[in-house]
Image 1: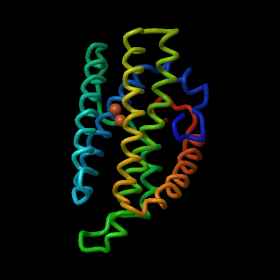
Image 2: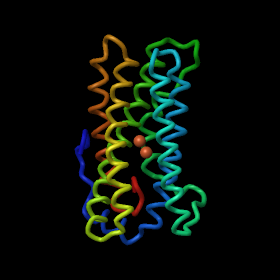
Image 3: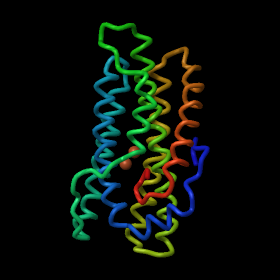
Image 4: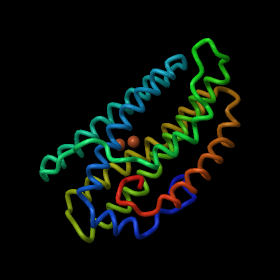
Amino acid sequence: MLCLTQRTPEQWTRSALANLDAVLVDHAHCEMKAATNALSLAVRASEVPGVASALIALAEEELAHFRRVFEELERRGIPLGTPPPDAYAAELRKIVRAHTFPTRGAAAPERIEALVDRLLVAALIEARSCERFRLLADALAEAGPADLCALYRELLAAEARHYRTFVELARRVAGAESGWVEARFGELVELEAELASRLGSFPAIHG
Ligand SMILES: [Fe+2]
Ligand SMILES: [Fe+2]
């Protein structure tokens, strides 16, 4: 569960297994978006030593995930297509919208708050991905196919590591007085929990 306070309902796993092709398509798009989001954050964080390079490395790993899932789609003859609607990501964007990125000339605290918010939201997305990959891996261990089960076992470990990386980077961006980051993360965890319970069991990685 990592930081999550709301478990994914059991019905989600049944729905995902029954719609595995759609879940794989959604998953491929999620990996692609994870790579581009990490790169976008790297540009925003370039003033903080060490943060941008960590985010570029993370983006490279997400790109490798995208390739893995894309190749899985190709093997199965499933077209990638355009990104399906992602209500989860859209709602999370609304949560952080209050902290829009100020221009470079703006006061440093505002820029730091905006960046920390986005890093913490990215951490939450990783945590939710990790939880759902575990549910999928466990279900696929029984129902098969075995190669997909192995893929999700491997990816869930990577997403757990990415979760820890994003939280650590948020603290690093906040600097010496990073105590407020924990309080903000607590707020975001509760908002994500409400969102996860509201969105229910749609067969998508964050549906
Ligand atoms: Fe990934
Ligand atoms: Fe990730």
